[in-house]
Image (cartoon, rainbow, N blue to C red; front, side, top):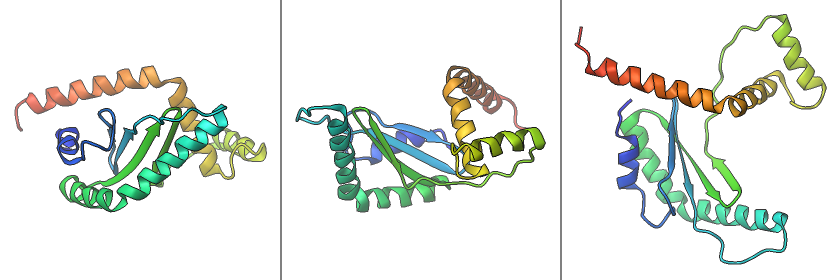
Length: 167
């Protein structure tokens, strides 16, 4: 993967879309770009009304920028060989759209399958697949600092690899 993804998007995105540098996450299949929209000018009586207004503003931004985002995504997909997904954040609301749902093959023994089945039986998840996604999100939420340290270490290893001799 090219190291210039963030720089490319920085040069390609309209300056008026976001109030700060968007967060760009890259994996093997997808580039996810999440930007922060300008704050709402109006005050709302409670959190529910504020959340509804934020969600409405995100929906409006999504519709207004659709054609332009599609063109940028096409160019990025050609350049980087990955699909591009979008998201927007406003206040306490974040919505992702056009994201991939990628199947992952795994082999689970009975204790792990029973855990997934318990989540399904309890109504926490609709299927084993949903239960596994729920469990992965839960682990990620509680281990984010450790995962961030691990990603940093992996980046350092990759940097050292690229500086080493070509064999």
